[in-house]
Amino acid sequence: MQARAFIHEDFLLGTRAARRLYHEFAAPEPIFDYHCHLSPRDIAENRQFKNLFEIWLEGDHYKWRAMRSNGVPERFCTGDASPLEKFKAWAATVPHTVRNPLYHWTHLELARCFGISELLNESSAERIWERANEQLTMPEFSTQGILKKFRVSTLCTTDDPTDDLRFHEAIARSGIATQVLPTFRPDTAFAVNRPESFNAWIARLEEICGSGVASLPALLDALRQRHDFFHERDCRLSDHGLERCYAEPCTEVEAAAIFVTARSGHAASPQEHAKFASFLMVFLGCLYAERGWTMQLHLGALRNNNTRLLRTLGPDTGFDSIGDFPQATALAAFLDRLDRENSLPKTILYNLNPADNYVFATMLGNFQDGSIPGKVQLGSGWWFLDQKEAMEWQFNSLSNLGLLSRFVGMVTDSRSFMSYPRHEYFRRVLCNLLGRDIEAGELPNDDTLLGPLVRAICHANARQYFAFPP
Image (cartoon, rainbow, N blue to C red):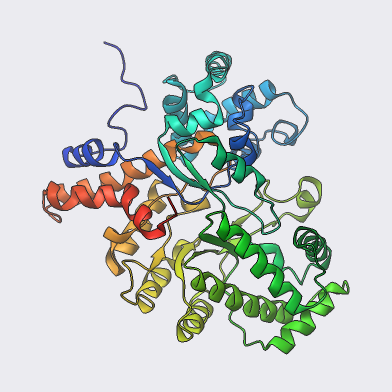
């Protein structure tokens, strides 16, 4: 008898109830991917990937970290090795990733994207390379074809305020079924502690706005102008990648002086940076609330820890980790400041340190105002926490301290078009958790109760919460 494939129809579904919930309620739902790092250009130009390296390994720092840990030289990660050599180096690493989520993701993605059930390793690498590359020539494996294949109803990219959004405009004209929208991410606007980066960004802002930005009022006017520009193109989301919230008291006069210091090429001190960032976050939070946007806060990453390799390879190459920053006091103060002014927008809090799950989950309840269900959300497990164990931690924290039923669900947070099976992974983990509770008698075995809950978390809650323009 033929052995069962590793990725099979009941993968991760350990009970009869879990299998029923997944197959009847979760699997049929389309994907609402409200946060990712996919390239709008690739979508607009309907990119056709030349090989499995381009679609799967290009820019994937998760895999690079594993390969380095396996003793693979940098040449095969970010260096000048050929695409096939890099793929073979990854294939040889895969058997060593057992119990790392990469093992699950690798085989789930091969199965769902290409129908390949063979385990990836050194001996199977060339066969899998050839089978996948043959399929990548087909129209259904273009970027737009992949979005159709995985039934992605909505996709939100991550975009700097200085972006002209021409690729989003091209996508909107293309008539594809997936709604592709921008997200406003102004992280570099806060970088007064790094004047070289800050001033280079200001120069781009001046160019796109067509006016000088020599003062704080001019910066605020330019940000409002770009916010209006994004809004006119149906953006309704912002995003901020922060170590922690900023909540230092700061007057406009103080912020203006810090701005001038940075514009003159002098780095702001840590305290000045915190003050300026606090001032700017309040300004932006009010702006988001004014236009009915949702504010996303990705909190807790300790980035660029290896300075030697940062200088050599640049950021986003796999040298970040979980930070242990104190979160509660500043987060509460920031949300409270906006709430006092009736300017707290819909907000999603993404936590990267699992030690803070309960801190974040209890924070939600402080600022729900009854205006909409789940106005303040505990975001899905992200980055180091978007795997089975940490997803369950997030579910449990939200269930114990809030309303799981109002959760807006999973995001890919990925740069790879092969990452859409992660939504399936999330749904299987969710249904398995609920199925275990049913089998243990801790939840009723009632599809009229749990079926709609599963459907809502997979898609409907996000559609209702964000209420993007049609």
